[in-house]
Length: 157
View (cartoon, rainbow, N blue to C red):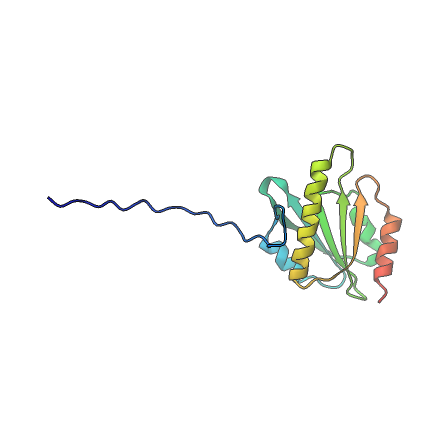
């Protein structure tokens, strides 16, 4: 009588995206469309990315051609989930604008936000973007005048 040899069932292995070796924290995933938008950022363009907590991913939200003087109108009702890149049309300097969570009980969210910010800065650099200035606004304390000043200063070489 011939003996049957059983073959073990194939093992399913889930491969997660490679995490940069120098980072000792969870890395947020950035959607391909968001990376492509960063790569193609042009002068006078405001690129907005949004953090989707439920999907654990940073995604493309929108892109607008914006005159430097009217940029503050896009931040009148800021969201801590939205991260923006603005390339000044005269100098091509890039501003990174984001809103910090407000409130005293936001420690966990602040830590997550710092991780997102660092990941976006790393991804932007990988896509060829050099950030000239990072502008951090606090939720509920957004100043259009300060943003205008920051944008004007980025218009100089």
